[in-house]
Length: 274
Image (tube, rainbow, N blue to C red):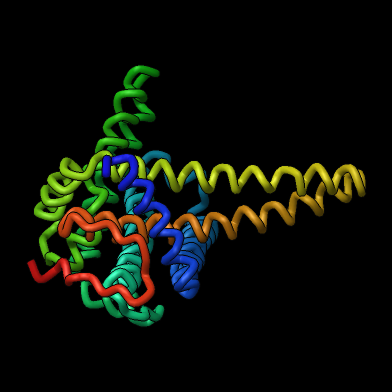
């Protein structure tokens, strides 16, 4: 079995896990809700305290930078925390168990210290890359964009490494890079596979808007657009959950070399015992 075939099997496995354990979808919903709550808190806090114009001017520039980093950090922390919960639930299922949302949250809480430190590092790197992109020309932006993609790939397995191998942030990055090197084909094919599936599924929302416009004119188009937006939001939730499951499946493959073709009645060896 080649890398492409294994990557595609892992993609299908991820979608089967989501279909089997639909409660996992609650985790990306919670992540989005908390992120929006934090965003609203920052926006309202700035508006009612110093005003947007003053935050990034003169002596307030340091305050503005600190606020921006704080938002980056909290957003990263929320995303990583709930991603760890998804990975935890997926791992339980891949080991033959029946995961609940509380199981994933417990796994994330058990590793909250490492998640916190990793969120600080990830937010710092993200801010540095974004800041440099805003200050360089077109070629520089392309270079920094490539570095951002490289960082994403190198850190692909950081979350499961953090929660199951108990490494620090830099140790987790090195371990993740090593695992990606050994599974680059499966990882890229799996990620692209999910991306293509959800892109094509997203296109199905366009006929809703067109149909609304044809049947109801401007008002119908607005209604169709609202329905399509809800559909796209649901797809985004499923995609986020599937991506987390794929990370868990690829991590299991990187350690055991096994690709599961089914879930019912199958129990895999515990990869963390190695």
